Length: 106
Image (cartoon, rainbow, N blue to C red):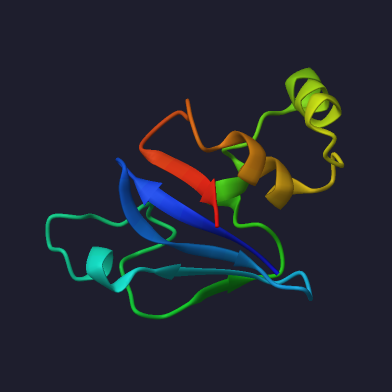
């Protein structure tokens, strides 16, 4: 099992988990969830106490990854399998992301 802390504008928003069976789960942190100043991290993840689950990495997070030649270079230099989207997300989405979301390995 691998996990990532998800931050929105530097504020801890929740946890993204990849289970050993390949299932993906996103759950908001309660302090973020009940803070009325904070909005949902995306339209696909409305603020809710429920777990969001998927058999593939959620498109919202997948779209944070490089594509094409940039992806190949990142995977080669970081020694990450090109099919390991979660691993690539953990390795590259902690700084300099487009937008408010950053991802940090737990």
